[in-house]
Image (cartoon, rainbow, N blue to C red; front, side, top):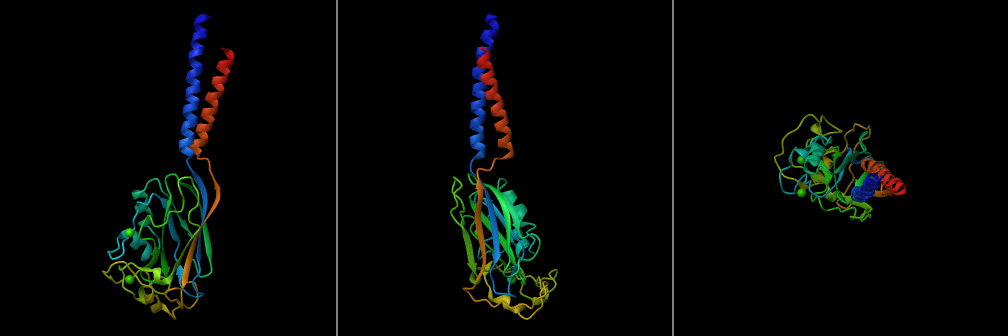
Length: 271
Ligand SMILES: [Ca+2]
Ligand SMILES: [Ca+2]
């Protein structure tokens, strides 16, 4: 009887320690999870430029897809020439395995006047910086995106929203410098499988888009870019839907911790 009683008295502190340790782990795992709605709005003039789906990611600011004045590499070429981001997304994942990534408007072209959205759960204790890229259509290799991966810090470490909207004008459109401008080989108005190498570097350039004026697009309208340097062309918005979203792993830890705490109380009552 004496032996059993001593045994219980040792188990109770152990179980209490286990439950406290598990609650500590939950605090670390929950961090600052935020459910954020990313909206992508094409605000360019009607019958003007459209966008391929917008590739996005929240990360630590380590994935740098391109540099102005430098030859474009596969990740940004896969956005700028084809719109698919087939190399952009894997390159982002390789650079930042913990990043939250996605595609806004995956269903098709984002035409003038259209807004598409995507909801993501972001751990803002880790992933506070936003990176994006999309092809302009019609074009051969024109795109939008952020050169610096730390240009847009959308959240602070506690999950507070620091930037509600990104807005850019035509003079912030990039030419990847990888494919020469040729309407016959341009996506949305020509045969996108054709290409003539440009062998250039990434630079700001929106004036070449006018080469496609008067051509019928894949969406049925006749293209007229109708933009000048300060014409706003798109907005990316961030709306916090709710914060502190439980992770599946954290939910499992809660069950474990509550179970351990219950065992502690039962043992305390028996003792
Ligand atoms: Ca860069
Ligand atoms: Ca080009």
